[in-house]
Image 1 (cartoon, protein in one colour):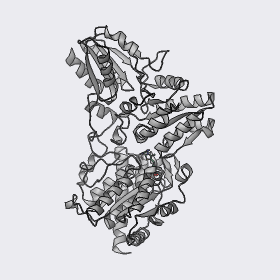
Image 2 (cartoon, helix red, strand yellow; image 1 turned 135 degrees about the horizontal axis):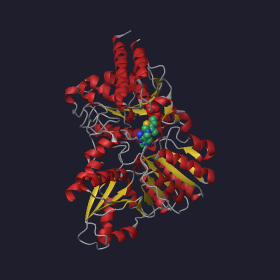
Image 3 (cartoon, chains in turn brown, purple; image 1 turned 120 degrees about the vertical axis):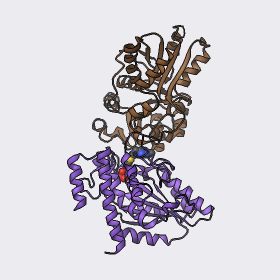
Image 4 (cartoon, protein in one colour; image 1 turned 90 degrees about the vertical axis):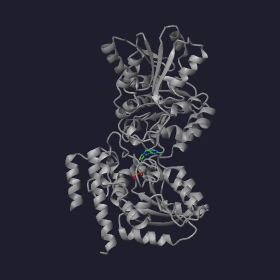
Length: 307
Length: 273
Ligand SMILES: Cc1ncc(C[n+]2csc(CCOP(=O)(O)OP(=O)(O)O)c2C)c(N)n1
């Protein structure tokens, strides 16, 4: 995903003179192409994220379109007040990009994990919180982002994420139905969507079931229109899946939606995500996902019990 | 050669070997970053810190924080060699479910680790708090921090620097592993870091500037600044990223790369000879 980010941004910078890239001493060589094409619009801001974020606000308020890029904890919580005041309060059109989100840098430990970023940014007025499931969604969101007013946060993975969304019309705030089925409605956010897709193969094979799998793409704006249409579809279970804390992310947001819209009592919400704890026993992303039942097998186990 | 220096050389060589082997076996990056600070870690652990391994929770122990947390592979080897835990625990390095991965976890998981680091710019302010706590509690011990040059980009480092001077914390010591590289380029090109020693001086610190691979230089500098009262102290240590292995020295690719089999062999050969 990060390579797709770099190449798409290079394209955008060729098309528009106001696109700038601010990076916090990461992405070695990744931006060589960008630098070649727009040398004075690439700024390595060093390991000084708070300064980088306020600086982006200043550039945006001066008519530029800065993208701020570093590892998710450092581009979100490390400089939260800079985001709140410089970006959200000033409605500055900065695109924050967090790379290596969730468990992507799982082996690097809690300093590099991010399970709270979306929850925290979600409650800042005026900022959009996007988590594309693959590079197609990412590229579409980037293109649309620079036509919109105000700050946008895009949470991405690392590299090698499979392509899941091949639909033509990908839009910020609009879900994509990746699979249309019955019994379960699985609402997914981010690259972990691929685990749900994998689960569905097993569901079909072993239980003969086909769930509906949705890539939400965005937490804020939430595609409420779509969710409204699902209320009457008769799903017994709505399942949310995210590589993020079960507090404050997609699960909580969908719970709010259900509560607000007097959803039928028969709908049960199951939130799959990271519990409220730090992770000490480390390993790669696959390992930690499996520890928390967030891989395709863990999801299958949850669904099987519901049948 | 005096006896101290021979321990220094022997331990540094041993730790370098283990760091390279672990990087190869467990595919752990930041090899250049580790090799650059091995000599400083050995000096600090063998010649400076007053810690009794049997009493690691003694409130009056000296405290060390590896503020450049990505140097953890070197720190873990040092802690094992000092006997903080059994060396065979390191067999789990990088394995699923292990506590031994790329950064030091919070205290309680690996004996001897005093603070979780890995997000740059946290170690110095935490050590500042610990040094102040020692003063408040009337303890005579000190706090030591190892910073990287890239880390000195962070505002939090300079915020701590100003406050430490104003609090006159002479029990706070910092070492900068000044290898002139950070993740994506030369430190001086990314941020105008120089004159680094002058900066710390003007922030009210007692400063010395030395060769961070030379035992006598480090030792002389430490012994000298130690006598300074009422000021926090820092030694700017000029180092070489990848130090000790010719084809890694000053080549920042080894910030990310792990050695292949041939490179491992060559590296080990160089360290033996
Ligand atoms: C707050 C923060 N931002 C970014 C990173 C990512 N990162 C890890 S190491 C590094 C730079 C390494 O350079 P330096 O600090 O000089 O240490 P060296 O490896 O050269 O010893 C960066 C940017 C981080 N760990 N923490």
